[in-house]
Image (cartoon, rainbow, N blue to C red; front, side):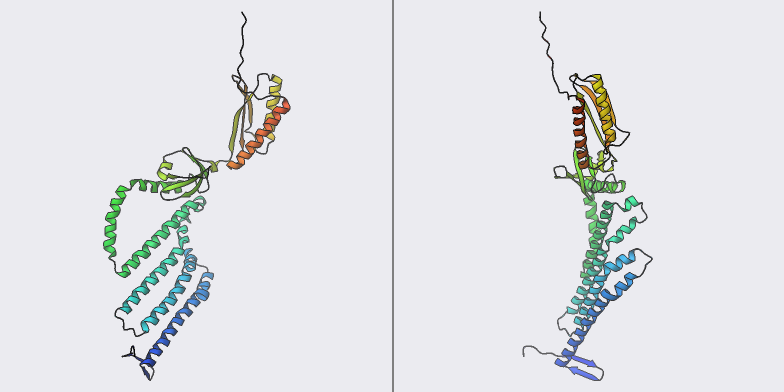
Length: 360
């Protein structure tokens, strides 16, 4: 024979099995243990955890943890059965039992960390006592979620390293020295990080807002630890460091309740006073009757006499903060002004020069 089985026995009650019968009995017992692990996992997933989640709990984190740990613990039941089944077999390989125990502990750690990773909603509970504006801040919630997941990953990696046998204490001490050196060389990154926290707490803008920072204008698409990403009008993405944003003046168009509509209208000097008065009255009535303008803010006044035109100030505030809507409303009002000018028989002025020739 290629191989033989020695020193193998299996005793159950008054019966004692040896040799291949004993090996077969142990294999059957191992299969039963694996099946028991599968059964416990099925009960956890289909019966026990749904029943626990249906109950009302005093702590808000309990339902979140039950929901996130349901699948990992059910799989852990199967791995526990598999581990017990494998260790119940008569292995002749030196060190295999220790290896299986180490692999089992690593699997248990990873599954538990997976459950904690999926329970990132727990981090949002830190904002439960804050104001509704802070609780609904998507950027701050995203930052808390990312921080929570990073901490869980670090915890899982450190635990697995300790199980394998790495000297975690020495590594942490060395990491402290390295971290101090890096922090001295990364002051700008630290400044960006704290500036990012200030942006999230002070909330001058949020993801989706249309802002202007210096000569950059566009929609905020992301705020992270280091920088803020803005999609400009030509759809290019501009990345600005958070420290630069905190040092600049930020204009947030999303916080506007209205947008200004203001310009100077030039008419020709051939326009009579009666025409001017009628034109200004008609323009005032057009603005007052428009559904786009905020009533009480409309102004139509003759302000100055230019080199080649009589200048009329037209000022109003349009009741929108959406840039695309403002452009459409501005377009409609400009066309309405042209209609009023044409109906009143008044012409637009344009730059011109009159030359007088004196005869001697």
